Length: 219
Image 1 (cartoon, rainbow, N blue to C red):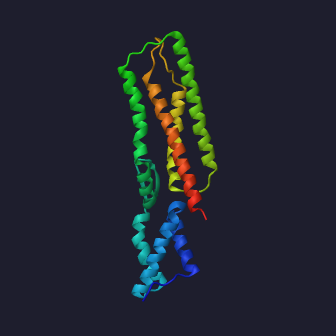
Image 2 (image 1 turned 45 degrees about the vertical axis):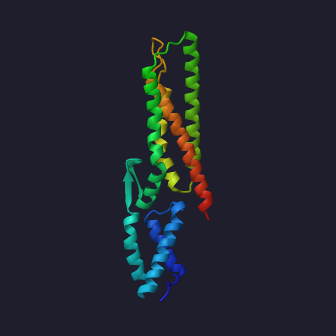
Image 3 (image 1 turned 135 degrees about the vertical axis):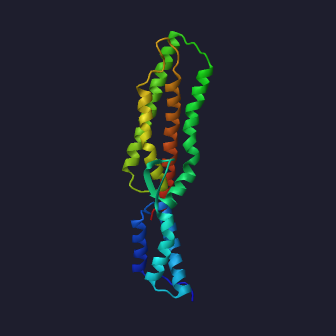
């Protein structure tokens, strides 16, 4: 016997199951929905089962993929369905370590170099770094406000939510001094600023990915 086609009521049951399991991320929802529907239809046809029996058997199989999980990549306080988490980790993994590199490179560089600045150079460089800090922080907050108004959920919007706390780094830099009393450039605030600039760029990157996913998958 071939695969059987589900009724509208049965399709609503599958949709409700996905809502309960928090599969509300539009870049994965239809894919998971179609897989589950196909599994149920195939099982009803191949084994001559009623919908309820096939639905139970298929959802038991899918439960292990939809269980809530967390990861150190995003912080253990954040959790989401395993299938969504796996995609989030796949697209974010390389971006997780790059801010660390952005911090370490200037830290190591300024630790090795002994640079002496004139009073005018110190004043001008300090102004430039302060303006750069304020502008980067303003851009980051701008993205936060835009993202807050966005109601659609995607894997990328979850990543953005976990990155939102990075503004704390910006405030650390904002209230730090780039030069000490002797006029030496401080490596810690410079390194934090480099990392924060990259974090802001990362936020822009994933927000762009989020918009692309919404445009592609929203019905």
